[in-house]
Length: 129
Image (cartoon, rainbow, N blue to C red; front, side):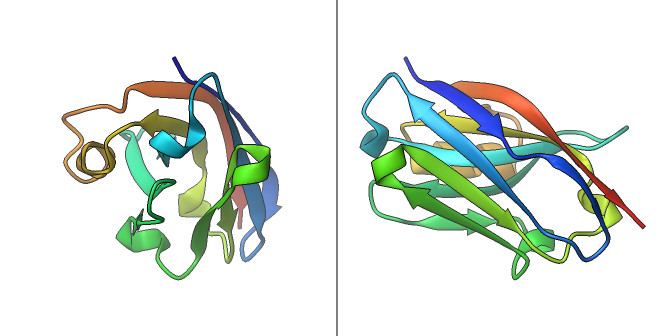
């Protein structure tokens, strides 16, 4: 099994930045794709970004391209989501998730009718105007 611990949320103003962290434990980190999802108030869950630790492939949802960056620190078993130029529409609870299959993770993000194998708890990001 995989355990994920998300942290780093907070409150910022429009245009601000935050870095979310997801610490992965319990299994071989290198075998997994780690992704970030979010759910805003009154909205459905949506995929934000993911990265394959095996080969570095990444996926970004269109509204965050150019503003968010996902990266891996293998020494710390941690995946980061650096968020820049934040907008009120980015306000949400952010969750990290893991799946051994990159394409299944991306499918979960793009189509939404499937779900990654493992989930962490959420961390709240609030962006005020």
